[in-house]
Image (tube, rainbow over all chains, first blue to last red; front, side):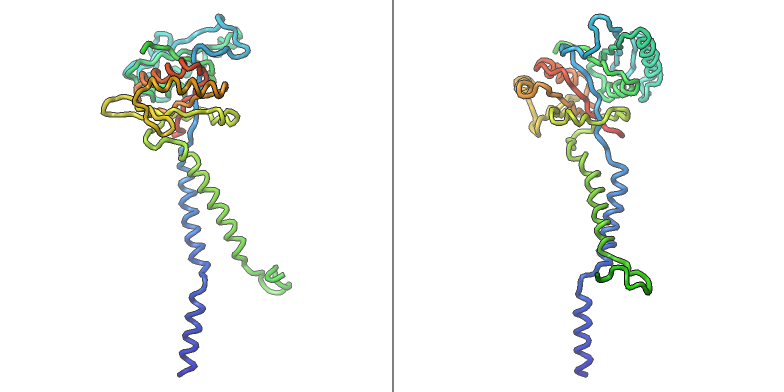
Length: 151
Length: 144
């Protein structure tokens, strides 16, 4: 009887030791969670522009650039040099992208850099400006400036 | 060498310690990549989406200065936040930006604005940035 109780105590002491299997289970679950979250992570990206008045970029001859004006209306309608392009709901702006690509190619042939001025309506949404900047980034147009308004 | 593959007979033992090491390294890696970007963004604004925008220019990272523009839907105006400080009077920003430009000639201002902010508010802040003599500007966006 005495022997039996001492064996019980000894087995209880052994079970109190550090358990590796549940720890691995937990680590696996946390790992899975972060792996799934990593695929959904939002990454911050940037669209670069130069404000008027800054020093000219090397290789750009001022006064000889072709200037293109992109107007953004309150409702999101985009106009390229006064011509209506795409619908206000279109986020990818395929017509604008096509026209910009053509302009870029014709400017490359004449070795004149393309300068784009964005003239956004005050009540238009910033997201729409970003849609246009995104299209310019896709066309690899870097000479971007903004129409200044008086405040 | 205890447990170093045995003495030739029988199956090699499964080593738990290196496996835990690898697991922890993987865990730390995924924790880092999921949290690194989130820390830099003001949680109270929703960045506009621009899938074709460029990656951060690492050479210019130390010259960057962020200007956050939250959207107040009640007034449909922008709320200017610089270094977690809400600027009630936007005119105060001009001397602040001028000082920044004086301290760093290569200063680049990163405009982090909510996608719902009216474009006029963006032009307003760009006006101040331009008046401060800063010509290098970038617009932060989300990839999705």
